[in-house]
Length: 286
Image (cartoon, rainbow, N blue to C red; front, side, top):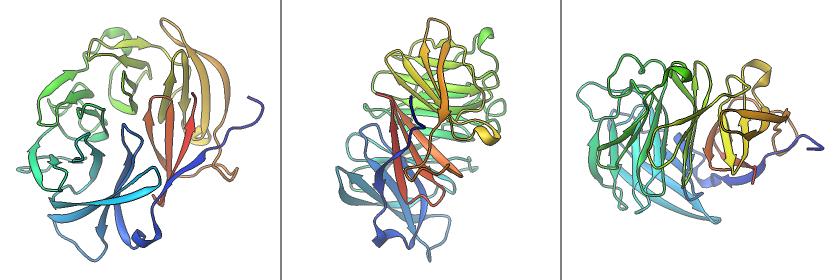
């Protein structure tokens, strides 16, 4: 790689919606960008929210009725509906709400406290990775990574072999059409889950990454601790490890280094959103 790569613009929240609170935002399994919005003046434990979706440059909205998530995570379902989960469980309140394509609640269930990542796949199943305040203290999320159906049926959970180290926090999660990849603290292996079978484990050469991209034998890990927050490690998948090929930085579209940001990973693609949550940018290793 001759120069430090840059992110490219992908989707932007229209100016007409900038006066609303952005509760959460994501890019789904089909590449559609979504923002979960609430009017800034409206408060309360139960509220209506608006999902603004951008697909192929076109906008559409879906109003969700009676949302109760305090710290919401949102993603889309293939039938036009949405799932909203509260990152922190509330006593007596179902943590996950599923909404149909008209925005009406269709079912609700629990998946365990301390949700770090919520990503749906192309079939509508939910992959949930947890952070450390849930793992070890809540039976639903003790495995650290689980797959649920959109009606709350547990379909798969991670079973930890001794060689993988303790799964305490799901630092990075990538849900693609064929595979799910996870990168957990404490030992930071790369877990490969195909067809909801036993996870395959590979060692990695970096710690603290926040994003993982995979395309065939090519792999990239993005992020790290302190000044490595924008590190990009390019490597190759072997039978048991990621072999590093090159290390560089992934810059913003304007050539500057990034600040606080969050990421969503889908197969070879890394979507990055700066702290103001108004725009998604893209890096694609394919």
